[in-house]
Length: 608
Image (tube, rainbow, N blue to C red; front, side):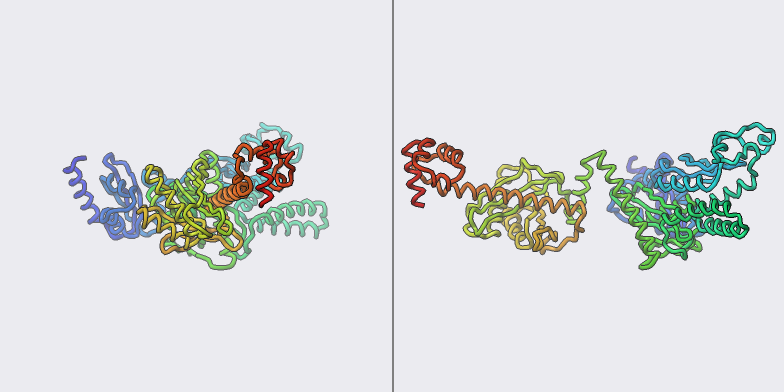
């Protein structure tokens, strides 16, 4: 599009925006081909659409969307609720490129009660509304199988696919099958079970699938007592077995409070590019519908906007008429005759916590599935978490961590471990013998090592880390900063990992002056930082022990005239320790290093 066309389009759009009404409604953005690329809702159409063109947007996606708008259409409605419903329908109809997309739930099964003269009850993944009444979809398949098993034990329904019309039955077109002979079916195909009795069972099954198990339980109890009063104990016992089945099923349901009835519960969790929304429906204190679904986020929608979309979608899908909706936070949303509740305590709070637990578990499961397919995805997620938590400008692909080790100032050493893509890169680990510091001065030792490390990298034009971790608190961070920023004039974020009195990672410090960053213990991110700290400590301690061991041997044998590395190695191999060399006779030593060297060793060790 040339500049003249752009100017013409801009004037055209400005004219539409300035003439938009201040009413609630739906707006649609179209591209040059006339394709709908975005659908949105608004309480005030003019104000909402004007906001797209009145400022420079931070989001790159929004800037691209605005650049592709060639035309605007809108629909005025009576209320915000109507706008929500219309937006939901238009998004599903046109699937605009820049809208949130609901991930299809075809993989989840439902329970269907067919629209036949003698209906069948079965599980299916195909939804054909004109062929039956559907309950679900069930995201937890074992729950669906449990309710189907209950129905099978309570009612003798047909499982065949015969066309059981009154005409076919009266004409005697059918014969009973094995299911009749094993008493799983009462033979409606040959007229042994009336339509009225069969439909009474179907009505009860619908109540069970709606979650109204209490009604069925009470009905069975009344029938059992009636039969018992008539001294029909055998029939009463059969009803009691059914009653026990229903009560057993009810006890396994999530019963919150019998007072709570016909309530919807929603919660939301987000990850990069995806929102997870959990929906629970409560009937007579029991959860009879539970479903978690995903939206693929397109335009950096907020949690509030995504949850609003989810509420409309789920209520329409499940045909919910609940007058109360429990949500985790306040929503700028109105629905006719519906109350939104953000509970603080009690049974409703318990319901919300249960929904949050479900949506978090679903998110974790989805992440684990994705990470199995792409192992690097976990590393990227951890790096992004570190970047977000520590407010870093770039993703910390390359992390370096330092630690000192000495005992009362002797054999002072330091170590640097390197993690790349959240995994140890052992070929890049480095050991340092402290050269310029005398005595136990951890701060000066840390400065020497950091200075040597990054001066060399600068000279060799090597790769600088994205983050430097110090095994210590504010003091260690400051001395590292003095070298990095004041001396070497580098800009590398510095993070401190402080330990408690049990030598466990207790807090993470970042920024100057350092601030404590709250990272929950037990999370993968906390484990990664803890692993880095443990690894550098292990590496430093191992190096220090090796050096101290060598120095102890060196003090005994290295200063003896005529004893070089080969003879020292031969003596240690033969006698295992300096103490045993000292206790050995000249004859024994001579067999290993010769008589002259044996006398020199014996004389020197006796002096010590």
